[in-house]
Image (tube, rainbow, N blue to C red; front, side):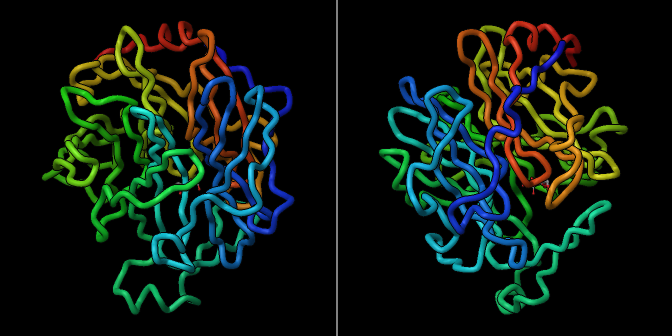
Length: 337
Ligand code: BMA
């Protein structure tokens, strides 16, 4: 199976408005009618490395332009003026727009080392300590909108004390309840049945109260996904099951992409999985960036005329697009556990 990278990659790059000058990455993308809307994560600077969500639009899913001159969603709107909202995964359910986002409530600095992992410094920002929150911990939530532009906070999906991100809401209710994939970092050890952080599932009647997470999938191939895995984007409903792209991280913090097939009625049950990554950092913009090298990080997938459009962040710096025929991707899910 071969993914095709778009010839205009990276299709969205930083620049222009002040708040997206340093980096744009990890976008949510939806299609409304014939139009594509992209919710990019955007940073104005690296010190502080503070991100908000900006809105772009496109007629063809490739050439995007800004809709407005300010972000549509910020941590300030949640009461955390120095914080970051991150990795918007947006889905439309019953006419409303739901944005799953990650929140880092306070500022931190990012110092790229140029050769490997950047260093993140929360030390310059005492709010972390004042609020007795672990530096760098991420909480996740859902914001809702009627028009895709004006979002308001609906509620948090995860508790404040644990690091839980990579939230992706299913595009419809399952058995009468909303369902969400998540990645609670601290759910490791004997009690949880896994040694590595993985993909978990919770249900809710109202998007406010969520059931205790149940385990869906953890790393199987230690070599490329042994550090952790997390859901990439909104699950895609197919006649064979829910198709879920996910990212896997290796011991050197290289981010690759795999795919799962989940049972339609019980998505905690994995019925198919790719053995090898379907995508890994190859091109220059996937291997070198302003922040972290060697990262392909999909956060959106759309099926258009039988083709899956995969939108992904590259090294926390810019945005790429890759496509693959849906049938080919499903056929690559040979392994069933
Ligand atoms: C993950 C998240 C993403 C980020 C990626 C690479 O853990 O923080 O938002 O793109 O790391 O830095």
